[in-house]
Image (cartoon, rainbow, N blue to C red; front, side, top):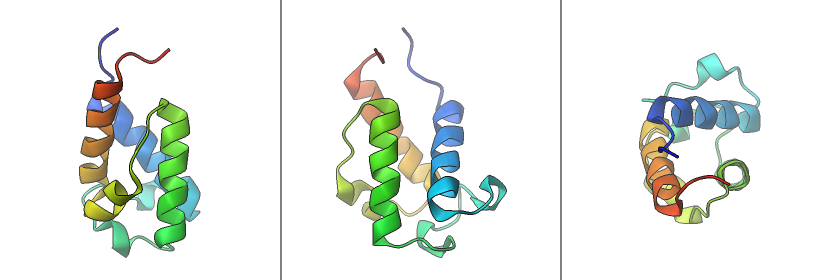
Length: 89
């Protein structure tokens, strides 16, 4: 099985971020600073990480979301973890 395309991961992560922050997905600008998104705080960040872990079956260290500035950077980190984990079962 080939790796998931980054646009698919970006779409899924954006959707998860929007759901957790309770904003329309259109308001999640992938190039905006995560901390500038409405309602983004440490609790929501950890909820986002948990949902992504469950969705992709990977483990994302909590610090990853705090060390990335944008949704796009976070998607890059998640994409790398998905690649490391291998094919989805």
